[in-house]
Image (cartoon, rainbow, N blue to C red; front, side, top):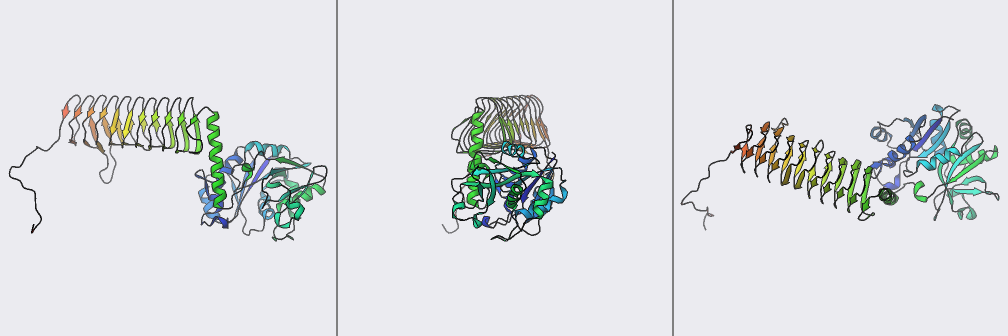
Length: 455
């Protein structure tokens, strides 16, 4: 059957005590809803419908790039009412999978089992065994173990509240039957809402089997209602991603002190120290070593490179056998080729650094093309901005830039050229020659240090 996915994302999230809509609250650097959408897209559905409400304009604007149809639930009248808003766009011959925008850690494998259990004669339902089921709808089974209904916490009696199998809210069923059941929902309950869970009873009455799939863990189906729960999921996701890295052969100095906020690919024998944050798409080659307190974003770091402590590598490509840091910053659109050394308090921005070149101390290389085996002395600055436009500096192979040089772009320093320490170079420095630009040193005889008046 063709598949339509409905994601319920209209909740206000009052307990978050935030102006940000609940489904936009960040988990591992991305909105909760983004995590759900990523999993939904992996199922190759024919359509994904997101039912939004509170803060809807902000939700749509932040996720406008997503290939979904947006459905407004103007009044929050319950989960059944929310799903009903999406049904006009879903044909009867589709299978409908219902997800929640605040249940971000659900896995594709669990959803696939849920879909496999759904047919024209069965309804797929994801349940979970809970250590503390407080707040969850309880799964009520008959003596044969068949699911017969779901009772919400506020409507449950003492015996039903003792049940520890809870409803995750995730289910799959034929669209035609769902449409009929939704039309028959009533709101005569303690909340005065139209509960989606009431379709379970209707399905049982019509002789459909409830194919209950038990989630492998509580974590996978946990929802987020406040900042405490958000922090709990953050910790769970951090541990999950750390475990995945270690299973790929990565050595983590402390799995509890690493944050992976994106997709990380790794080679063999990679080592990552504590308090490393990786954002976006990060690729680490064989035998890469990442020191403590580093921030890596959308970057590639090739084999045998070591990033010393306290560095930032942001949207850059680092070649093999590089030594970076400590306290270095590699900014976007920078490419460092093999055997490059970038040392402490060096910043590289939108620059190409050739093989074997070094800038070991207190230097800014911005909008620069640096050749092979160039030595850039401490305190060097490529002066790339004239107040309006940026200009490039080109440094040829084998050049030696003296400490404290100001290279005022646009500028070319020729191959094997030297610039004298403390020079301000404003014109091209010829290949193979020494170029100096210093004021003449003068010593003033008879000079006295100024004194304060009246002393």
